Length: 357
Image (cartoon, rainbow, N blue to C red):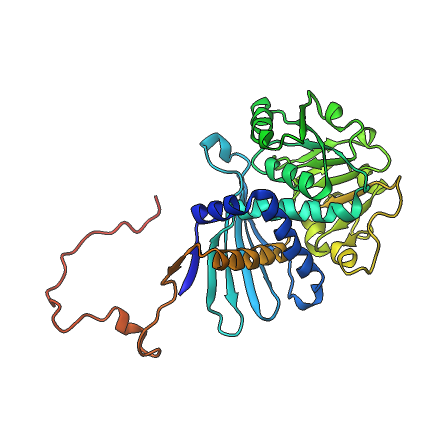
């Protein structure tokens, strides 16, 4: 049997733990997997683009377990009362190929993205960082805010979105963290001025320049989350040229990240080198650092591994009969073969619609 975790199961798990603890624990799983980087078979995700968005498959395995995520990105969906991003995934046993877990990954992706952002920032942001600007206040913003509050000690959050209702929503939802001061800014410039960390998590599929060079101050760490597919950016190219840029998996980020604006030989550092201690994180107080985050399949592997462990520990989830279990494994037909008592009268002919539409 395969363990099935739906949205309600996942919400119960995260509520039971508390979202702050879940983010911290997720980050531990992600860090552990980055530290064994060479154990993984890795590839850029497969993306099918359309005029309205993208659908992607993200696989990874470590020789023992295999995981994949199905995820979309459709910026116009909110106008239809649909999520911009939703996902589900599978964790499987490599030896048999059998699925261990089938799970929602919409909530879980928000948790893992925030956990990854804060994890990388622990190495790149100045240790005394206490103020963060958060540009883009949509569905992922609460998770980013909580992650940086819990894992880096951010005390003041300056938020901005071109949709004022999104900022009001974010401020309202963060009232449960009374020691986090939330200030609604009236512009990107107002939000960013004097901030230690700037997180951008915008949705539009466009070559955007959410941040321009004149907004960037020495020592800032930029957590660029929203530029995550071809033709979608958030940072002016000159910011990248002035900064030390950290990426997850260089072959994928070259295609999808903000560095798609730059020549293929522009130097970047893959995060695993910092996680393994092969390179330092921040190299000086005045250094500008950028995490050009596009989301990588290893992080989804980690999140499914964490969710599987968590669900079994808390006895949450539902076993489902996803894979056939015939008494004779060479006789799959037995599952649909008519019994001797079944009527052999021909069924009434029912017209079927074959053509699409």
